[in-house]
Amino acid sequence: MKDFISFSPLKLLEKSSRKGLGAGNLGVLIARAGVGKTACLIHIAFDRIFRQGKLVHISLEEGPEKVTSYYNVMYHDLVKALDLTDDYDDYRMLIDRNRMILAYLSQSFEIERLRTNLRNLAKNLNFRPDTLIIDGLDFERTERTLFEGFKEIAAEFQVEIWLSALSHRHISEVNERGIPYPCHEFDDLFSLIIQFQPESSGVFLRLLKDHDNPTIPDASVRLDPNTFLALNTK
Image (cartoon, rainbow, N blue to C red):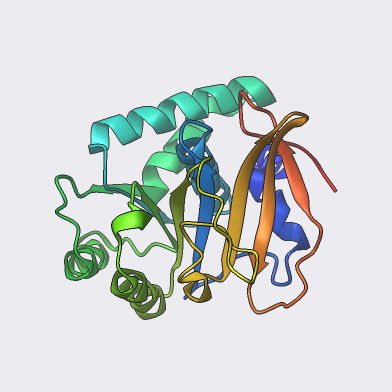
């Protein structure tokens, strides 16, 4: 879907050193509560799927029905915003065919359980994802070992993994590399770090870490606050 890719929030990564995250790597989106983390993650999912990739959405807070509902609402808004009504069913089928949803509720998530589920998807359904999205992980209560486990999963299954991290207005802690709380203590495990920032002039995505590149490009993408589609880049 060329129209969507032109307005995808991931246009931000066109200015990164590798033009994307890549298999074997972890990326994280940092944002405050209520500003659109899940919406941006779903747009990342759309970007991957519309580029013919396969994706597993892993929810740690909501059941599969609720996650599916989020996708349906976001897709409806996307079609309306880009006037893609004529292709509605075709792209809807593409999403359904290339996305799986796994939900781990009541603190039931474990790396080994995820590994088993990914193996079962490959063995029983011949479904091998290119991207995992993990929504709802509490970074404040997560030990480094879990992120190391995600790195192992990314390498073993040759997938890229996107996560979201909740920041707080009242916590301004930032490490010497410019990475804010709550990712400041294990930013070495992430290849890409993006911050979602509401400002007086609009809503922006900003690149805080670009793989091993010591020079972070002065790049941002301004998003439509209603659709979370990219308005421009600079």
